Length: 158
Figure 1 (cartoon, rainbow, N blue to C red):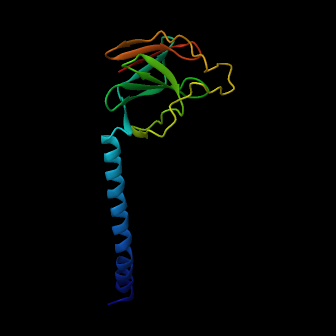
Figure 2 (tube, helix red, strand yellow):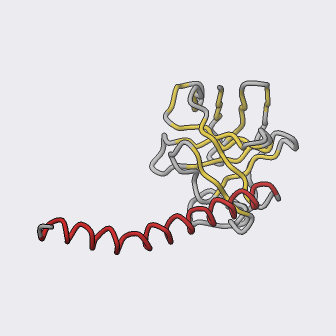
Figure 3 (tube, rainbow, N blue to C red):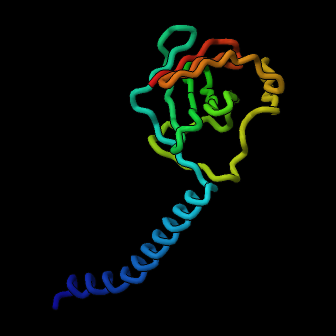
C-alpha cells in the first residue's frame, strides 16, 4: 500500500461520519418542511414562466409568483429605481405592497413567522403606505390589473 492509498483510506474514514451527519440533517430538514407545509405553516410560491407585466400599458420587466394553492399572486415590478412586489389575494380582492420583495428565483417558501407586508410602514418616500390608493383591482382567470402605490396601472398576465 502506497502513501497515497493510505491517505485516501484515512480521508474516506474521516468523511464517513460527516456524510452520515449531513444526510441525517437533510432528512430532518426535509421532514420539518413537509410537516410545516402540510400543517399550513409554510406556503410555497412558484414562478409563472409565461407571465408578462406591463406598467401603464407598456411592457415592463418583472415577474409573477403564484402560491401553491393558487389563492395569492405576487407581482414584482422592476421598472423603477427599486423593485416593488404586490401581493394580490385572489379570494378577497385585497392588494397590498409586500416587504420584502419576492426573490427572483423559481421557487421559494415562507413560514408564518415572516412579517405580513408593508402596510402601516412609512418608508420615508413621498408615498404614504398608511393609506394605500384605491387599487381598482380587476381579476380574470389569466390576469390581474391594479393601481400601484404611485398610481401607475400594473397588469400581470400569464
